[in-house]
Image 1 (cartoon, rainbow, N blue to C red):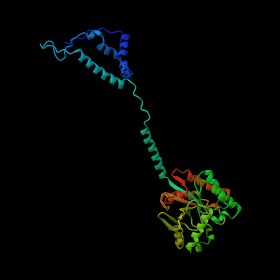
Image 2: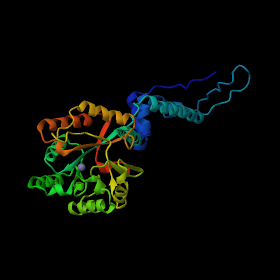
Image 3: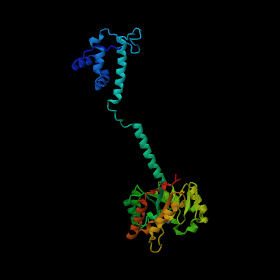
Image 4: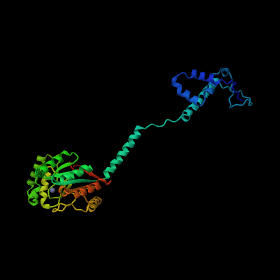
Length: 349
Ligand SMILES: [Zn+2]
């Protein structure tokens, strides 16, 4: 038989006063608040503080029966208070977890960093997957060069101009064009020889010393900032492991140019033009389809990289300039392509 402690309930205002006495330390305020939230003060104080229950009461051990003849084992008040305190503390800690609003997790910086890195990696992977196209324009400065430069600037695309040294001084207009080319920091200027072999290619490539001197002279005079060279009248390559000469008789001369420190860049596709009328091939749809097919079939010198060749002089008339703009826009706006400078070609040092 359990004797319930005779108790008189304290008025709530009294309980709260006692509460403040019992929990004076600010360090206990959280615990105090948690108790408040489930109105636990009342029983806590009821059992611990009110004078009535400090009177020696006997609590019967619930495990024994008053009828079995054994004396009831008393449970002392201090033990009871201790058990109650443990019970209430447990209840309070539960309340702490469930009664209060869970703090909303703030931005975890490690998590954010991981997400940011993930996004960057995906973007980098996407960019890596893009096929690279290198727009290159030969033989300037000449009458079409300013038009080409204008389109490149308006369309804001990277492009590389392979300069013929002697063309920079031929006429006053060419000198001015050369000045304009040098002033544009978004394009790249590369060496296409000084003399362009004076268009006598066979003899030019007969003696290796001739071509090396010609390119060195142009480099000295024009001060190119890179070692990228394109041989006049020959589609030849000497970049990394790419070793290609379209006309075998020129091989020794082009090897010597490479040995002299030049990265020789040919082209994968040429936008041809009529050498009499200087009109570029009008079938731009076919040109774009060929670019697409070469890249898809991986038939370029380096898979997924295509060097595109056009000639400045083919863009003297406004209608041809618009064709050039159209082709550039088609390449630029194709999400599978990325336009690049010659110096960004794989293997160029
Ligand atoms: Zn040329």
